[in-house]
Structure formats: structure tokens, C-alpha cells
Image 1 (cartoon, one colour):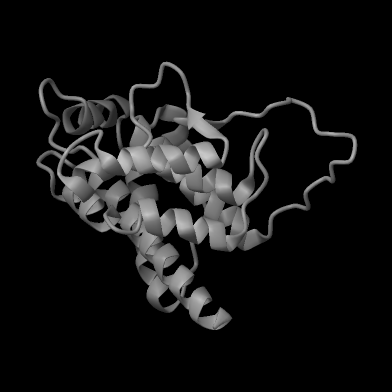
Image 2 (cartoon, helix red, strand yellow):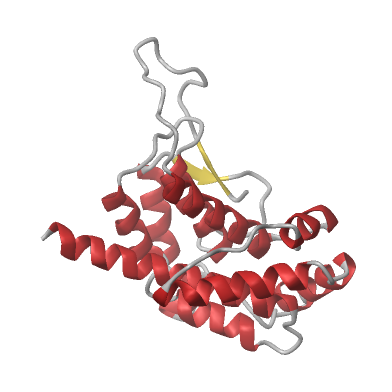
Length: 223
């Protein structure tokens, strides 16, 4: 996990109310963001590959069919992939010596430079939410995997941070993910040697496209 809350006090106040369970839809959103964060920040181990291979299908309709198909392809591949092969692929794509073939950071896509103004804007937004980068983590906060983890926290909440309303989720998504994710996942999918991660990119692209569309539709409904 690249982002974490920074609670002032580890215990809820005496007047704190217990949060109701997430709806099925919101839990599914949080779970998909959590999975994408995990896969984009580190290669899956044998246990995660096995869990994915045994996962139930996603049943979707209409425009969500791309997500259903991407999920099916990823889970099928997870059942046959060797964990070491996936780890080697991850290293070749994201951690190779010199400049890796793929750098899924918002600053690179939005300004053309790593660690640039978009990262500073993101850090200000995270500070407002009382979220910060975990000490010792190598990836910067604008890595796509870290941004997915932040979205999970905004949806589900976490230690020291309450669930955020849909409007706040939309604001964060449209500011820090929406403008560049499509190019980022396309680069992952097209990278030489992308095999398993081509499918991860396809899943990410399908899910994030649904998120972007849902926010727009919700905004139109509110008008």
C-alpha cells in the first residue's frame, strides 16, 4: 500500500458512530480498486494468482461487457501463469535498469516530466484528506497503483479517515486519474514483453472507463 491515512488518534471518539456496511456496488468498486493497486505496485504471488483463478465471473451488461471480458481473460491467465514468470515480467516492464519501458505516473503523462506540478497538486489534495505516502515506499503518490489505493480509501474509508461522498470521489478521480489513465494503460498493454500485464492493463482500462462514465452520468442526473 502506497498511501495511508494519518489519524490524529488511533481510537474513535466517544461520540463516533459506527459506519454502516458498504453497499454491494460500493464494495465491488473498492475491491476492484484494491486489486488494481496490488497488481500495479507489485507482481502477484502464487496465492493471489490462485485466488484470481478461482474467482467468480463478473456478470455485466451493455458497455460493462468489456469489464466482464477483461476479468475473464485475467482470471483464466492467472490459472496458468507461473509466479516467477509474472514477477520477471513486472520487473522488465516497471523496474528495469535505466528508464523502465513503462512509467505509470500522472506527472509524466500530464506534464511530460516525473515529479512535476501534478505531483505537487496531488500531495496538497492528499494532505487535505489526511493521507500520506507510507515511509520506505519507492513509488511516488501519482503512480497509477497508488492512485487506485487512494480511490479505495475514499470509497471504503480507513483508519482515521471517513468514507468520502461520491462528489469528493469524482473530484479526485477527475483531477488525478481521468485525464491520463487511458494513455497509461494503453502503454502498459503495448509494451514489449507485456503478457500477463497486458491483461491487467485491459482490466484497469475497462474498469476506469466505467468509473469515468458513471461519474458523468451521476452529475447529469443531479442537474
